[in-house]
Structures are given as structure tokens and as C-alpha cells.
Length: 368
Ligand code: ATP
Image (cartoon, rainbow, N blue to C red; front, side, top):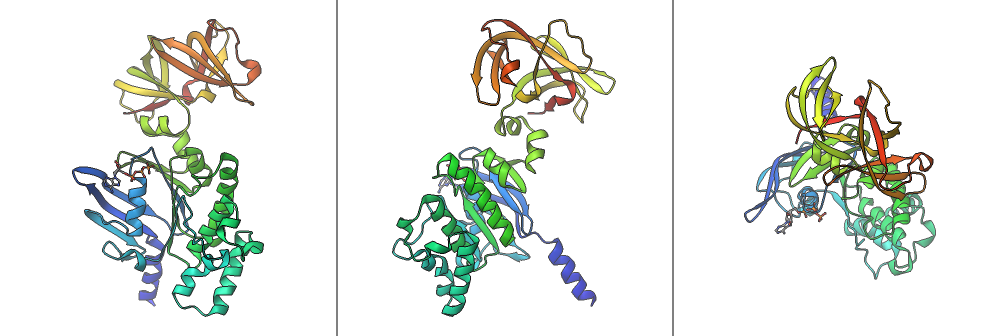
């Protein structure tokens, strides 16, 4: 009984996918530097980062298409570092769908089961269930060329999960679709993933996509993990300048911490004194401070408010974005900050002097 309990505990504790100290080099160039990552059972995890940061390399390593130079990869408790892709029980979905053009939609979905010699009756049942799941039960007899791009992508997902894989890997699966369809498909893919409760690793360079779909996001930069966390965590509490800048729009200013004042720190930026929160940051030296455009507001000249940092500048541009207006303000040599405000609150006159304020508590202090 004790042994059984230990087994249960082990299975609860082990991640669905673990990458331990994984290094991948291409010739002299290192694409991944000692990567450590654990993906939990049933989790939807996105790898997010700019082109060349190592997202696809990470995915291909999990799939087994390439081998690491160092480190190990585990699926559950099994070390699969040396296991061939076809023996890893992985489902893959790519940007270009890669459906078989000469097979019907139903045959495409049932392909993996047929390869594994499943009885026809079982294949038909599973294909029928999956067609229901992807809400395409009426197109089973059509060929891929006879359905839309969004439908093809749902079919590709159904095919990838037909023989239930341990992990579903998706590499920019919505990259070929237009914006509107992409948004619909984000909701659809997330629904399908949750219904199947399938562990999923999703590669994207689109932060909105990662934020709207994922349980956790891994932000990558030049072969390293910058930060891992839920969407709100990454957006509200970026740990590095890179994450702050890459995820959402943000104003970044160089600042110097010059003293302590109660529970905040005094800092200097653009020649003015400001206050920043005192959150585990060194109490002297150079830092970056970051403020989201939605946290800036226009204030009247002469406003005195202990909780606000106030800076003045010259209005240099305005863009209208429907529900909000972005206002650009020159606050120093070649330095502009952007404020998002309600259209009716945004000053209009180009070149006019304006004051903007933001709460001390909304100031993020970042190390490089
Ligand atoms: P993208 O969003 O552009 O697909 P990515 O984040 O997926 O980028 P990777 O494809 O993982 O990035 O590439 C990481 C680094 O490894 C890049 O510098 C890339 O040029 C390099 N690289 C990838 N594949 C190879 C290869 N087969 N040979 C040599 N270098 C490679």
C-alpha cells in the first residue's frame, strides 16, 4: 500500500514535460543556453519571444526532431532524450496544416489510428467524436481543399490528438490566418484544449495571442528564459526590461536611485525627481523605470499630489484608436512617452505644454 501511495505521489508530482539544463548549439552558435522548464499535466503553456529567440528549437527538441547537445528531456518520468520522434507519442500542428490533400477530412483525422491498425468501427467512432468536438461534423466527406483555412486548422488539431498524444505541440498554428479569424480560432483552440485536458506547448511571437490563451507564458530572448508566469503576472510584474518592452506597450526611462524616503525610493529621471516603490531593488544606482501608457493621466499645472510623479513635455503626436487615444509627449532629447487616454480627455493642440502624472505605485523598477 505504501508503495502504491508513493507511486501516486510521484505521478502527481512529476511534470508532463521537463527540460533539464538543455543546451542546443548549431555550429558555433548557441540557440539554447541551459534551459530548464517544467510543463504541468493539462497545462497550456506558450513560448513567446521575438524571431530567433529559440521557440521552435525548444519545440523541436520536445518532439525529438533534433537532439540537445547537453541536458535531458523527460515526458512524465521517462527520459526521452534519445527516443525517436515516432516513439514519443507527441501530436504536432504546424502553421501550414500539412493535411493530406488526397484524403477526406475524416480520413485525415483517422490517419494515425489506421496506421496503428485500430478496428474501423473504433476509428469511425473517434473520428465522429472529434468532428463534433471541432464543430465540423458535416464536412467529414470533403477534401481539405474544399474547406476554409480556419477549418483546415481545426482538422489538423483533431488529427494531431486522434491517437491521444502525451503532449500537443503547436508551432505558430494561426500564423497564416487573418486577424479576425485568428481571434476566433484562439478561443476555439483553447476550448478544444480544455475539453481534451491535453498538455499543450504553443509557439507564438504574438503577445496578445499568448496572453489570451495560456495558463502560463514563457518569455524567451536569445536562447534564454526571461520570465515565466501567467498573463497578468507577466504584464503587471515584468521582471526585466526586455519583458516589459516586449509584452504590451510601455514607457521606459533610465533613472538613478538617489535615496530612501519612507516606503519608497527617490530617483532622478530626465532631470526631475520622482518616487518609485521600494520593492527589493537596490537602494542606489542606475535602473530602468517602466510605466504603462494606461497608467499615465493628464494633470493640471500646479497639481500637488504626494502619490503622483509628474512630468511635463510638449505634445508631439496623437493617434486615434477607437475607444482610446494615444498621445505622444516629448519629454527630453529624442525621448517621447506615450499616454493612453479617453479621446475626450486628450489635449489636442500640437506643440502645447502638458503635464502628465502617474502613481508611484504604478511605477515598475527594473534591472537590466
Ligand atoms: P522564429 O519566430 O523566427 O521561428 P524562433 O524563436 O522559433 O524564431 P529558432 O528557430 O528556434 O527561433 O532559432 C533559434 C536560433 O537558432 C536562431 O538564431 C536560428 O538562426 C538558429 N537556428 C535554428 N535552426 C538552425 C539550423 N538548422 N541551423 C543553424 N542555425 C539554426
